[in-house]
Image 1 (cartoon, rainbow over the protein chains, first blue to last red):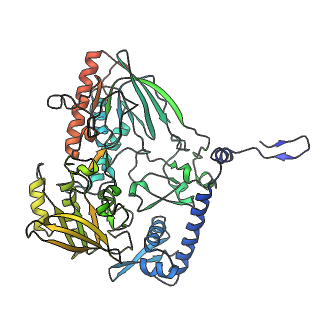
Image 2 (tube, rainbow over the protein chains, first blue to last red; image 1 turned 180 degrees about the horizontal axis):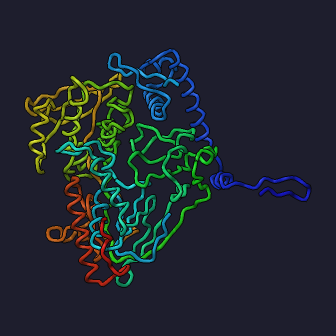
Image 3 (spheres, rainbow over the protein chains, first blue to last red; image 1 turned 90 degrees about the horizontal axis):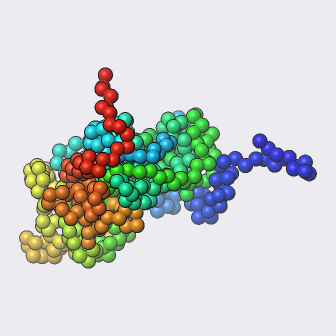
Length: 100
Length: 440
C-alpha cells in the first residue's frame, strides 16, 4: 500500500523487486554495457536476415561482427524461436528469420 | 520448498548418477534419505551426455527415468540448489548444516511452463552447454531437469520484472534469501562426482585460447540433438567440420599438470565421440592421436575395433604442440610412432581428451581425508572400497577416483549397503521403518 507523507506527497511502497534491486546495488555498469551490446547485435542480425538466409560468416561480415560472437547470438535467437536453419551452402548452414 | 526435517537416516551429497543410485538403494530398504544437490537440477554430468559407451544408448534416456524415480520416491527428499556447509560427528550420528540458495521462485507453485524464460530479455552463456549456447537470466535448467522449476540467476538480472508479469501461477518471489538450515543424520554418503582438467592447463595446446579446441563435455553437448547448435558445428564460425582430431592423454598421465594417473574413461569417450561424428557427418575424417588405448571394460575392445573398422583413424603418436592457422584451423605437430617422424597435420576442430578431477573438496566441511590425488581416501580399498577415513561416512562414484558410469553405479550401491550396515550397528533411526506402499 502507498503511504502519504506529512507534506502530502504520496510515496509508493517498495515492491519485492525494488528491494532486491536495492540490495544488489542495481545493475552493474558491466551488465548494463553487456545488455546494451547484446541488443545492438540482435538488432543488426535481424536487419541483415531480412535480406534472406545467411551463413555465420556472411552475417558476421554484414554486421561487422566476430564470427564466433555472431554464432553465439544467432544460436540464442534460434533457441528462443526467432531464427531457423533454412539450408546448407558450402559447408555452412544458412539461417533465416522465423516467419510469423 | 519442502521443510528440512530434524532427522534423516542418511545424507547423500550429490545428485548425479552415483548419488541417485545410493539414495534409491537406501530408500528401497526403508531408510529416510536427504539428497542434497548444488545445482538446480539432479542428473549430474550424465544427463548432459549424448550417448554412453560401448552400447551407444542415449544417455539422458537412461538417466532421466532414474531422476524421476529418485524425485518421486517416498523416502527420498530432494534438496536441490543447496550446499552442504558442515558435517560434524555428534553422538551416534552427524549434525549437518546446509545452505539453501534462493531460486527467487516458489517451487511449490512453479509449473515449469517456461513463460518467464521467454519473457526475459537478456541472454547469458548456458553452463549446461559449457557456454556454447544461451539461456536467459531466469530459466528452466534444461529440458530434462528435475525438478522442472525455474531459477533466477540474480547476477544477470536486469530487474525489469517481466518474468513476474509473465508467470501464470504468480510464483516469482524476489524476496527469497539464502537460508541456513540444520538437521541430523545417521550416516553420510559423498557422491560429488567430477570436474575435468582445465582447458588452460597446457600451454602447448593453446592454453584454452583457440576457439576450435574443445573440451570433451562441450563436444557431448554439441553432438546432442538438444545441444547448443542442434547439429555438429565448429564454434569459431559455424562451419560443419570436415576433419576432427582427438588428442588423447591431454589432461591425464601428466605430472606437469599434477595429474599423474590415468583417468580411465578418456579412450572410450573419445572413441565413442569419434565414431558418432562419422555417423553424423558424411565424409568427415576423424583422427585419434593416442599413446596407448586402454579399452579394459566389458565390450570396450570390441568397440575400439568397431570404431576403427567404421572409419576412425587411430594414430599412435604424441601431439607435442597445437598452433592456430589464420582461418582458425588447427595445426598439430605430432611425433608419429610408426615412422618415427614428426609431422604437421591440419584439422578443422580438435577435442582434447581431458582427464578427471574430483568434483568437490571436503576440506573444512567434512572431517575425512583426501588422498594425494585429491580424490577421497579409501584406506581399505580392496575389501571396503566405499569406506572413508571416518566411520559412518562413505563414498560412491568418481568422488573416490576416476571411473565410468557402470563402475560408479556399482560403487554407489556398495556405499548404500555399507551405510545400511552401519546404521543397523549404530541403532540410528530417523523414524520407525515401515514397508513401502505397494504399487496398485
